[in-house]
Length: 416
Image 1: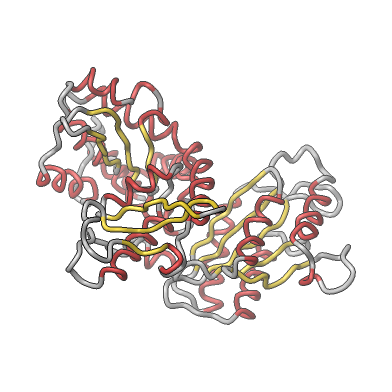
Image 2: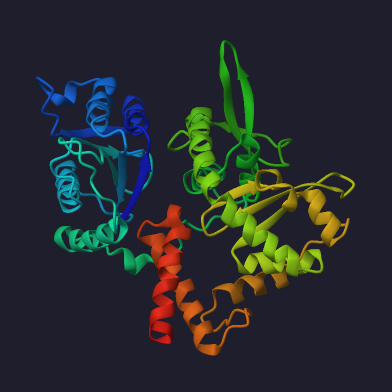
């Protein structure tokens, strides 16, 4: 099981996110707990009322700037407990985290292939006292392990080094089941990557030879048709978004765009710092690409028909997010890179890219950082620990969690 905790300034946003999925048939509201101020059946409440109860209690302590507690509990593929079991899981988690007396809403989502629930609550109790978040992640991780045993669930540690996404390959007409393969690409990109524009969404799809084409609809917002890129002249060119599994429509893409902007904005300084440091060390385009790939960042050039580089994007393979150069700042824009690395963009040979990526994940790889051998071994253990952090739900807080890991490494050294 994977537990991911997020915070926010207003619980209304988290409630509406879940309630709108209920309205679309993509989720069920399983329960409203401790809604004592409500008369009648809590499950009949409108979303405005659900949010209002949480907002009222949050207002008891205005000094808490981010009172929203929003957690998702995701089970391993193939695990299908009943709704009652999921509700028991949610209750035991909230009690263990110290939110058992708080008002909270529980939702079961059906928009992905794996079973998962969302719980929305607040960090202010009925007396206006703030519920501490000190060591909250560690507490959640310990509790997660206990609940895995209690409910007979797959342990997150056992899947820490398994691919987070199914392996997908570029799609071509006449090879395999076209609709199935195209759908797998679309859903893998939509559900796993962070992007902040339709153009970036298409850049990610384009890596697998798929394209989302906007089509006008009379009196409505444009719809989406998915097609095989660069092969539109072929018959049976596209599939309506509504005809594909999970219906990856324009609205679904826009929701991912909106959520991606916030997550990417928080991580952008870290990505920019990595790119700038690798740029400073590199003497050419090939070395730059190889160096970034060792940091799990892939360079995606945007070139005109004449080969001229007019833009650049970076894909953070670890956090599954794409950034344009302009999002990260002028220092890593296409113009700045050409000034440093040369006007003519040179693609690193495929064998060199593969080799660089293999070295990045090899247990025998010692980072060229000037560290002593024991320090290098500790750094390698940090790389391994990062995988575990991602599996147990620290993916959106990687920088903070890595600082904690580095403190542990300095204390324990090669014994870790």
